[in-house]
Amino acid sequence: MMTEVQAWAVEVVDEEQPRYRIGMVAAMVQLHPQTIRYYESIGLISPHRARGRIRLYSERDVARLRQIIELTQMGVNLAGVEIILRLREQIAALQLEIEQLRAILGAESSPPFKSETF
Image: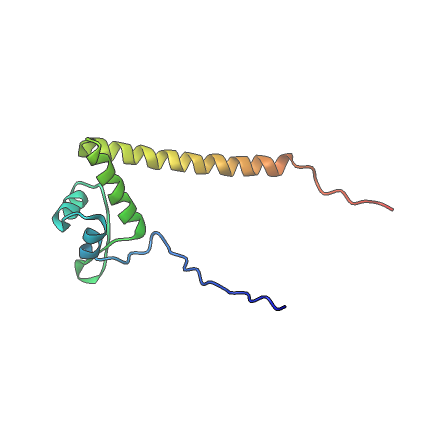
């Protein structure tokens, strides 16, 4: 009996790639475009600017907006949101650094390849 193998295409999404206009992002996160512009004006978000000064948002920008929404719904004011987001970024960077150091230490502590003699 022959087994059928199906290949599924998986799209790799670059989280940094600017792709969404403000109207689309507003619908995705259920915020008014003016609110998103305000968050940009106070430095909570920094979309890419395309020709004609059109704002283009990446997946990372959308995720950040969702974090802002989550925090404000919890009662955190925007100054607190800024601090929390900055601390989360620092923690993520430190965790990455720890993982890299562990990988280096793991590579150094493993025994070198031994060839067997017959």
